[in-house]
Image (cartoon, rainbow over the protein chains, first blue to last red):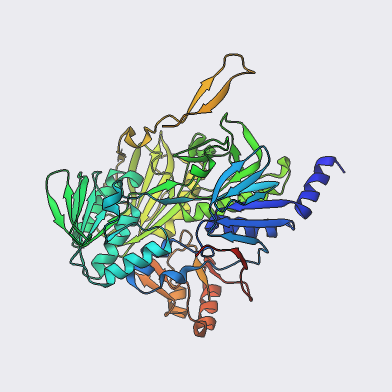
Amino acid sequence: MTSRVEALQTFKRDGRIVIVGASLAGLRAAESLRDEGFTGSLTMIGDETAEPYDRPPLSKQVLTGWVPATGTTLPRRRDVDAQWLLGTPATGLDLADNVVRLADGREVPFDRMLISTGVRARPWPVAAEAALTGVFVVRTREDAEGLQQAIAAGPKRVLIIGAGFTGSEIASICRERDIAVTVAELGSGPLVGALGAMIGEIAADMQLANGVDLRCGVKVTQLEGDAQGRFRRAHFSDGSTVDADVAVVALGGIRNTEWLRDSGLAIGPWGVACDSGCRAFDLNGLVTDDIFVAGDVARCPHPIYEYRFISLEHWANAVEQAEIAAHNMVNLQADRWPHLAIPTFWSIQFGVNIKSVGVPTFADEVIVAQGSVSEHRFVAAYGYKGRVTAAVTFNNAKWLDHYRKLIEAAAPFPPAQPTPDQPADAKPMPVDFPGPLLLSQDATVVVTGHDPSERRVTAVRP
Amino acid sequence: MRVVVDLSRCQGYAQCAFLAPDAFRMHGEEALMYDPNPDDSQRDQVLRAAAACPIQAILVEQLEGPAMTVEARRS
């Protein structure tokens, strides 16, 4: 028996694994570690006090009032026999000594660790305006509970800032309850940033048909409160105003990487970079041996997409990546698995089931491959340089797996295989995503040194 | 009881909404909305729904006892 095999067996029996981030990815990783035969000590660290709960229902079933915010605790696949340190955020990582530092001053040593700290809601940028009564974000169960109560109180109008998936879902729920809704979106239409201009137009039609006051191409410049500190009015960049008593800030998320800023890992606004086996990169872009990453905070290269680094805030990605990370944490290099799942995503809004497979932003053309746009029952296929890279379905989920296989097989675009229900006039059109605006992040590093033995990366901070 | 549905795999067959209508409801033609914490009185129906799902996308709690002992919890 080689020493490497012996060392692995000792680690699997008596080793110490710490998982920082006790939500979906952290929980599924813990379960998978036990499935893989890890019998050592397992510590789960989380900043929230609740045991792991599911977030997608928070902007759907919980807001309708059907399900209480506390009712989305995740079922367990098995006992994980872990020590749970909840309500104790991690504040630092020391890779020299392999220790996680906690906000309460404790230090937790480990042999291997998993980072699954996810994202938090991007707050309204003006703190005094964000603090007005009636202004909400939706990420945690407390957020959802507060917004559910505000919606149940029968507001005269709800303003939703940002027409991404979460904002659109909340707009849909308000309209189901016959509450007046204004949606303000900086882009040209709802969902445009994720799915492109063609879907954006369809999503805009859906919102308008359901009575949403949709305002695109405008920025909310100010949230105004009354003397009691209650939100009353929003000001827009075009000079107009809207009176409302609830404002939902749905401007996406911020990846929780601040606690790693002195760790020497490759972190930035885009997350924690890792290889397709979920091993974290250090600042120099060298892969580490004992630090793994999974879920919304991870950013890993996908071979199907030219090995570009991709971060995904998708439920299925958190589950699949956590299982890959767990497997690789307790196996030798030769037995490790790459995370090659094709991304999938869903959203429910205005009675329509929207799903996607692949990476729609990795595309130069899009075509309605099946179905009818006017009936909101269709498949849009996305292509890049003549191959299929993604598909989006509206009430046509049964076809998603077919397109996943086309993506995996690098099938030609437009798809050649005959499928039923092809529109007679289908032709590819430019995909039209918003420009490089979203890509222009500030630099995070500089390189110093000349000799190859001296060249190193240093983090840059604003 | 705790339930989660992998909606990225759900294809809207609606077997669950037929077998356990208090816990699983269709929203429009094929979107599923479900109660992630249905009452224990619905246990048999929910288990039947999970078993009937053609793509096995419904996960029901597998643990009998308490799921965890929390060592530290800030109020």
